[in-house]
Amino acid sequence: MGELEKKIGALLKYERERQGIKLEDLAESLRISLASLEHIETGNVDGLPSEIYFGLFAKSYAEALGIDYAATKNAIQQDIIEHEDEQVSAEEESGTAVKPVTGEPSEEQGKSKKKTKLQTIIIGLAILIIIIGGYFIIKQLLHEMRSTDRKKETSEPVATAVKDKDSIYTSYDWNTPEYKKPSDLVLELHARGASWATVLADGDTVIFKQLKPGRTYQAVARYRLRLSVAVPRVVDISLNGVRINPVSPTTGRISRVNITQINVDSFLTRSSISGTALTSRSSPVAATPTVSITPIPDTTDTSGTMSNEH
Image (cartoon, rainbow, N blue to C red):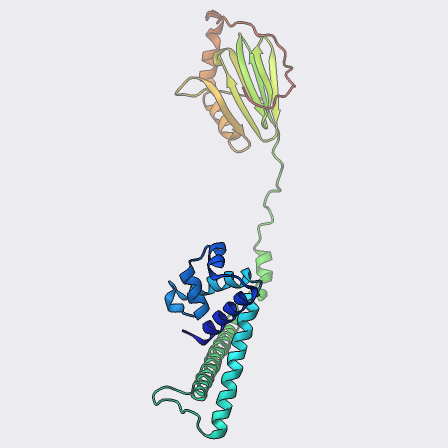
């Protein structure tokens, strides 16, 4: 049993008796067993399940009597400390102070050891900082030395390059042709029979309709054309005034054929190579039976645009 618990228990018992409250009534109101309250009043911590229960029960006990448990506990602790200090002072004055047992360090020895340990840690940190700082200083010096060597190595080639500047201009090919902006892509569809065509110019739909025999339809693009024709054999196709044949050799169809400023020459070159074949194919068209296609109302003008290809 500690001195603090004894004094707290004695104070609670004194106040309960002063207020004329029976311990049995207090146990019933607090719903704490009578035996536990008796252990509280005697300061018997061992009679309770643990030391925690003493604090909890004593606090409830004090609050039931109208006592501030925390303030009372602090006051008792302070009183015990002052009493111990007075007792130690009296023993030192009388020369009867108890010396610490051998093997157990005194308070002064403990403080001295802590101080020595702290000094050791501070000295170790200082040494570590000095080592790290020296490392970075040496590293920076080596880096500067290497940079100086590199500058010396590269200084001579730079000077040589400056001297050879005139030779660069004299050897330049001044006959390089001037850049010319590519001309627009002009596509013409001449229908010799009923067909359907879709043409996109730079992403905008400019032709999306049934082609009427005898009429010519034109689409102009700056960068890209996309062409689809339902019945290629009854439609004559020209690109920039040159007859072309964009029919796929594998499928025999014209479906989403892309013509751009990059590949336009390939279409024009292919048309010149196969010009004879185109002429021979176009001659028997008159004897070929006309394909029947259901007319679709012509609601889109040749110059109109649509946002997407259908």
